[in-house]
Image (tube, rainbow, N blue to C red):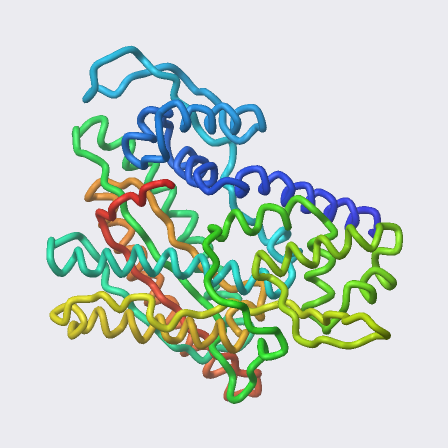
Length: 406
């Protein structure tokens, strides 16, 4: 069994290195995400999402094709535009983590990734809530449900969230077929699903991590790219999640085959990227030695301050604020990613009205299943099963505006 396990880890490490190609430049990640949803030409992408000139966007498309992330599917043209036909591309795969790759990431990195993902999703959702209030957009109001479950109940709820996540993209495929017949315009919809462990009483798991220095100007995906591409970065973070260490100590215990300069360079780079912090300075002889620790994300408590009072007083927005605070509390406490099988997805899909209605109907069925599962779990807890605390958030809104690429 050992060679098989080792082979699996190597293949997951290769997947991380492959992801680093996409994450290295923020616009590349956006291109691959969009091409996974539908075929597009560089010109169509630039017209909808920006990203500089058409020439610059085309260069990214070609780069992604050379590295196996995009492939040309056919030549076509947008019926709304005049001009020569253009090459349309699709992504070869989604630039996401499967569960095996996710568990390879050091805990502090998973926590930072979750916070960054939630901020992006919550920003879109917050705008969608305001749009539903002012513009009459389609929406399924956000529900925030605290649950008491046991281990079996947790597994069943997560399985339900995972299954519904997959069905959303099947609905997108069905919508594409329907609009050929109906002529209806597809609309860009966002579907939020989150299931995570809420903080247990006074059990603040992440306090052993150092405080981050604050928000950095470098986009979060670009901060991840060098770590994904280099095993030594990953090894440093993994060890410094467990304890404080100096460069010399890490070199002596884990990287004696590399030079001290190589190790020191990576410590400094991780500090610049916000993933390590100096927690102590120790004098050794005439020199000063820095002691480092992995960081937890800097949680911003004022992400959505610019909200009209008329919206802030609605029940939907109050639920949104309560839900956001529960997520922030779990991130700070460390429980959000304490389990590998938590769920966080913000699915952007292109749907017609029928498709959006089907997704909302499925969300309601999922919510009913979760409530029933809590009742079944309570009986098992009464019979002696260990209780777990979970928060589930569900919402959908359409249309949402595309975010412009840098």
